[in-house]
Length: 487
Image 1 (cartoon, rainbow, N blue to C red):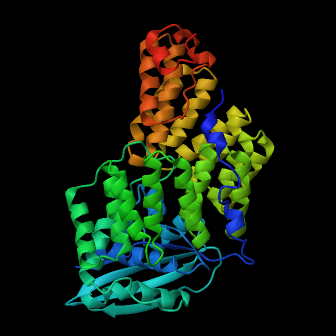
Image 2 (cartoon, one colour; image 1 turned 180 degrees about the horizontal axis):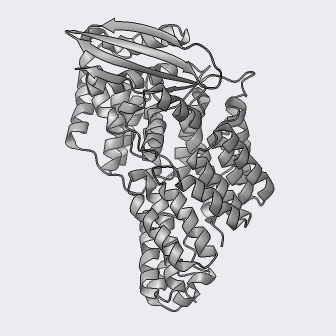
């Protein structure tokens, strides 16, 4: 029962379509890979400032091609998977394991407090891969000086040359943070659902207020782009994203533009935008990850392996990249190599539940179901329970024809996968529940589940011709969903 069914159009992507290898030579020595966590708030310090300092420092790092940086969107995804609040993540005991899971060599944590009319910021740069004394600094500012704070932090924490504040307007700085902080959780990559939830009016008002205060502020244009795309205005979204890409390099603007283009139906152009972003900044790991996801979704496994090698040349031992290398190897039938890559990923971040799920998936590919079940139970033993782990153990039991167990686990996975970025998990859960229902002699439910999987957009191609669904052949409703499988 193959999990990887490719549509013909996906195979038309070319290796010569702006390949990352041609644009970027691997670094002679590994570059620093930096994660910035929103600063803890003390006293009357506002939430927007905690986010603004982290986002501003991320955007400042994005001006220097010598470093790799991880985005707040990537951080948010990991925190939500682990039920960790952003306000708790600045604790080094939490931050360092999170940074290790994201492949960071350095993590920045800190705190901000307000005393009277002044803001006091403490920051620490902590080595994740190498034990060394943290670099610690303390800064303070009055409100009109806050826009310059990220540049000051970058200069002191990373010895980067000052480039100046991203805006001279304290009002624009605040409004842009209020605009972007509620948008980090919206998925913008190749696996994003067909329809995004529309943010509240207050978020759009904040984006527009930031633009009114400083029309050149790229982060605000990027935020407005995402909102317009969620509303279905892809042309307006593209215009705002283009404005966000004028001037300093704003990572969020590139992600927003690529997402808008994809929603307009041009997946190839969406990928080219991401590749152009990486050509400008080789350390933009979020964009690199989306390119790789796109290749894996399009079944371009040889191309994905080459790009993963380029990724790993820049960030050696990156756990996610090693796990994805295992996935690509498995799809090419290199099952022993796939399991080995996944085990190596787990060595880099021992016990990581997401990597455990990837290892289990490769063991399933290798038909080592009992071992895969043991690995999945280890992943499920770590709170909170991951819907993806439930999905995979339900699939193991489906393959073993343990239908009651499979149904229970798949329904739990479906119930738990409620977030915007879990449409793929929901889709596969519905698909596997369709198989369970068909095998249980419940054809009406089976067809309903297939329709639900199609509505989620995952998988790209329903398993219409597979033996588990053979009992549905001849039904009109099944024929409409699966004309190639209803014979």
